[in-house]
Structures are given as structure tokens and as C-alpha cells.
Amino acid sequence: MALNLGTRTSPIPISGGVHVSHLGKSYGSNKVLSDVNLKMQEGEVVSIIGPSGAGKSTFLRCLNYLEVPTEGTITIGGARVCADDSRPDKASLDHLRKVTGMVFQSFNLFPHLTVMENITLPQRKVLRASKDRAEEVAQSLLKRVGLPEKAKEYPARLSGGQQQRIAIARALALSPSVMLFDEPTSALDPEIGLEVLAVMRDLADEGMTMLVVTHEMHFARDVSDRIMVMGNGGVLETGPSEQVMSDPSHERTRQFLKAVLDR
Image 1 (cartoon, rainbow, N blue to C red):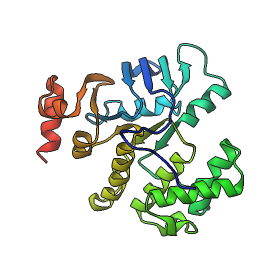
Image 2: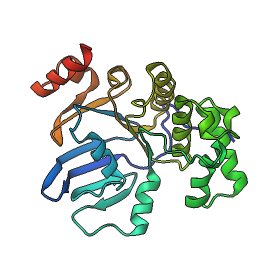
Image 3: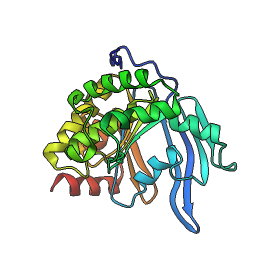
């Protein structure tokens, strides 16, 4: 059965967007995130940019509790957790992580499993899907990312770009409401990274809600609906992509863009 992700004019059937309110994260007395707020609609693409150490990856990891936030609330795809309470129970965390697919800088594929097994494992464990159903979904996702012939290969036999595309397919296997991308091309050569960006562009065109930490300024400008600029653990500004890239309102944003665009 082919995977149907819909189109921008007919968005994929997902429930709810993203609402982050007053999110904070501290390590002891060291506050690395402070009062971060974000609202996203279904089908929206937001790129997060900013200098190293701004808190971008930490913010993304807080959204599915890979990092435990110390303040604020997170609502994604109907799943809501509150950092002001004690750590959410297992059912709440499982729900949150089910609706948030995440792709990391490193591919994080299981090296001892084939590509097919990497994609079917989360379906079997989380969705309790049958072997046949999980393999059917996996094969459609492999076609989706342009690698149907790699089902029986092990990750070590794939290029970095191929591994990252498999990681995207694995994240999509649980039909998440939102896809989180943490610098997905930073470990790749520029030419190979284009393969991954092409898949991400297709997902955006097809209506997937996406939050992307990136240094790919062309992607941020051309694909994102909005750009959120972070610095010193907080949000410097948020606005339409073209406006932020062409006429940023914050001096720190102007300094950052000048540095990365003048390279």
C-alpha cells in the first residue's frame, strides 16, 4: 500500500500543531533555555537558526523529552506535557514521542539490523504492527525516500546520505504529527546533503509539519514558512522566512546572517 502524505493543498491527516509556552531548561544553576515560546499550525515548516551554543538543539530535544525541560508546557499533536509538574508518566511520554518523529545529526541506525529491520522495529514495538504490515509500510517508505533496493542492506554498506534518508523513513514509520530535524545534513558532504534536503523539501510540499534546526540558509529561506532565530538560550525573533533573511529586526540576527552568508 503506497504511503499517502497528501499535498500542500490537501494536507496529511494529522491532529494539532505545536504549542510551546514559556519553555525553560537548566542544568543546576546554568540556565540554557529561557522563556521559549512557539506556535505552529498543521503543515507549517519552521526553521531554527542562530549561532552555536544558542540552545537550538537543546530546545528541539526538550520537545520530545530527550532533554527534560524544567519550565513550561509542550503540546504536540494533541499530546500535552507540563514541565512544572513532576516528570510525565510513561503513557504521556510514549504518546508525546509517538507524535514527534526525530532525525538527528548522526543517523542513529542500529548497525546490526538491516534497513528493513531498522524501519519495522519501531512499528512492531510501538504500534504492535504485524510483521507483514510493518514490512509493507517500510517498503512504501523506502520508495518514498528513493531507496527501495536497500531493504536488505546493513547501514555500514550505505553512504551517509543514504543512512540519513533511512533515518527519515524510520521516523516516518510511526506516522508522527510533527517531524523534528536536528542539523540533519551537518555530518554530510554538501553534495550528499542535497539528497537529504530534497526529501525534506518533498515532505514540506506534501504538508508535513516540520521543525528544523539548520545552517542550510537556502533551505531556511526557500522551504520554511517562518524562521525562528535563537541566541543565548532565548528567541531573538520569529517571522516570515523572506523577511527574517532580508530584513531582520535584531542586530544579533544581522551579525549572524552576515557571518554565514559571507562565507
